[in-house]
Length: 317
Picture 1 (spheres, rainbow, N blue to C red):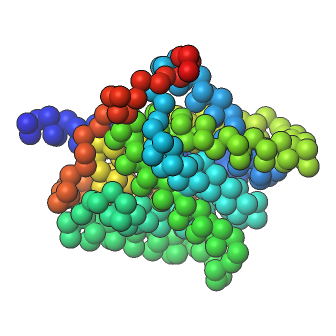
Picture 2 (tube, rainbow, N blue to C red; picture 1 turned 60 degrees about the horizontal axis):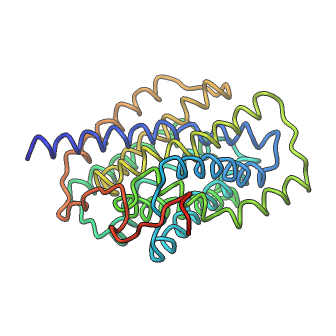
């Protein structure tokens, strides 16, 4: 039993880490994309493109249709991760760097943990909160000392804070729902749910400002569509469902430092030895959060919904 539990925990951490690695490039890619494309097109166009991929996946896998209650919960997921986070980060990064955005995104693990307690009924032990708080302080201290933060809170920062709040909600609700639907189907159905909003807004943005970009702009948009909005969530939601939303969510502590590294490579921002030291410190706190145990463990992961729901995509009504 212990070996099985350890294997499940290891797989959850691995899946969560893959998700964080995928998401760590989202802000730099968004920064590149919005310099050439309309931010509304970047935010919602990538959701439409990912929804097309999601429809293909659901059809090929003959995924059972969600129940009425699950549709409502999928709307919350869509609000957070399909619409809210992409829109507010796209708007913010038209006038701000991805490195600055990493400062506010550092609040996402704590936001996800709090919402996991409220929504998923998880009860992390004191060690978890101490380690996650220490990781947050380490990240913010590094960013402050590195000169990333200058001046007071701006409207751009408020946009990023809104993005963090909505994303944390989408992570918490999606992590719970992934225990019933599976990680891949959760994001796929959320993308489908959002189509009545994302399609009209994409068309409006296209009409107002026809998209024109160079290879770098379209490559960034392609990454946001395929990885940030689609494949990254396959791993991320599966990891949250298997290992616990609050616990696996703390792997995101490494995301701001990774984002700075990608910003240096892609946007020519300077990253020194302090970045390496910060990454090692954050890694220690991530390990401590993973060694903690929740009082109320997550429910088992199931790939399908209720047994009596036999409606499938592509089948006759």
